[in-house]
Image 1 (tube, helix red, strand yellow):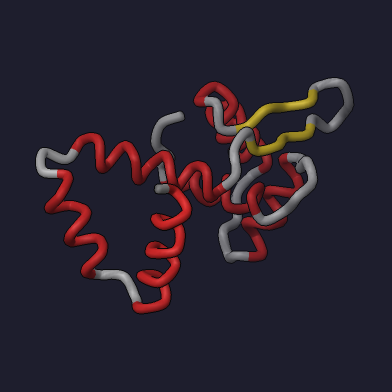
Image 2 (cartoon, rainbow, N blue to C red; image 1 turned 180 degrees about the vertical axis):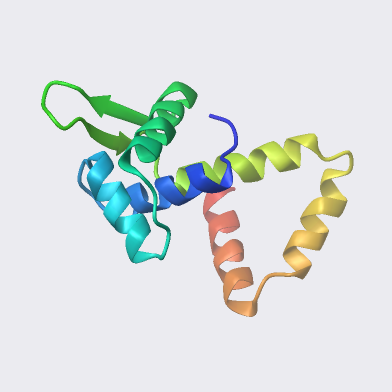
Length: 118
């Protein structure tokens, strides 16, 4: 899928926050609730870019068009983690630093997930 710029990430967060398909106006309203005022044309431009990048799909059969996330936030973040790990020269060092920085609760979750995966 690729990476997201700051505004693209804000738009995706607005989309991921709902389980329903959203319009550009819905996204604009969600961003305004977070203190970010944008023109609806700007939101439409960002949605168009996100669609080209494969982050959202659109239903153009009705007006206004409705947009949905192609993948969940968790799927996207997991993909980013795999990309970073794949780009690491020393995967062991990266994993060691990552694990060293997680909370006890997250470490317990990781142990459980690793046991299930093996």
